[in-house]
Length: 365
Ligand code: HEM
Image (cartoon, rainbow, N blue to C red; front, side, top):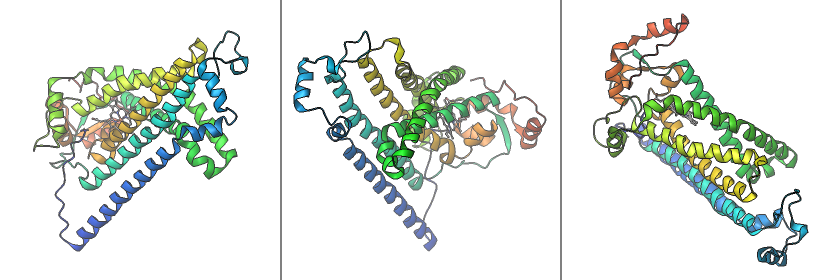
């Protein structure tokens, strides 16, 4: 799977049909752009902390705020936990609320909707990256059943966490008015329970996935060349790549850094019983949201490239095998190492139906 290796297939709309297709594509792209502009506009409009403040805490007056800010707060504002001297209404809480509502929320939505729009545009303008040569029909083993199961479990958990997280941040603007309070109440508490319980499971499995893939994702000089050539987007030939190419390694290291930060900050939020202060929780919340929204936006790119974006990639993660042509074009150095192990489709089928175990020695890079 190559990050951004798509090259424009020769597509000349010479016939009427071609022109109609061109117009149809243009309309779709325009629609996506208009919709994404509309959504981001709405996001910015929603991010009015003062408006939300009026709904969330209507009884706090300007005088009370002055009092809070000057530090003259009485017991009425105090956290009732036995050892707490923390003011429930305080300036740092207001800073957190403003950061979350005015910056994180709208810009997170802009990143995700913007990424979806860019991908859609890319697909309709540049198109799917097809294999340059015909398939040989001979297959190379790439991912074991264990690795595929791990990948799909982590992916399913990530998508569930992304959807429930997005609901926690934006759901009220859409579903509350759409479904009414009763259903919305059920929906948001279900989202919260799922998010809180699945987060730690995702964290543990992500670490297992990262450790299993580490050997193949050590950065090398050739990855830099891969990026300089934009993964094959410029020039005629695919840049050199071993088992993982530069794009895949970038995704790996993003998960190994931002992914771990999101998991760690999630733990701080999930277990408030370790005496962490509210300020720590507020910062954990901001870090968690920024990291998670960024990762979700990039994950859209990974999902696109792994499905419709590149011919032959998805079968790697579904069947465990890839065609020789795909291996040669996207991972030429890995292909050179394992080409002697290519088998026919019949042999793959026999291996799978006979319950034979996956070979394990196909990865040496
Ligand atoms: C439905 C969504 C997804 C699809 C269709 C998908 C597809 C794929 C495919 C086809 C590959 C194999 C590429 C190859 O053989 O070179 C792959 C690799 C990988 N995927 Fe996904 N994926 C999805 C979601 C995710 C998510 C959410 C994560 C992480 C949170 C993830 C993490 C990875 C990693 C770490 C690799 C290995 C890349 C490497 O070698 O470094 N995937 N994915």
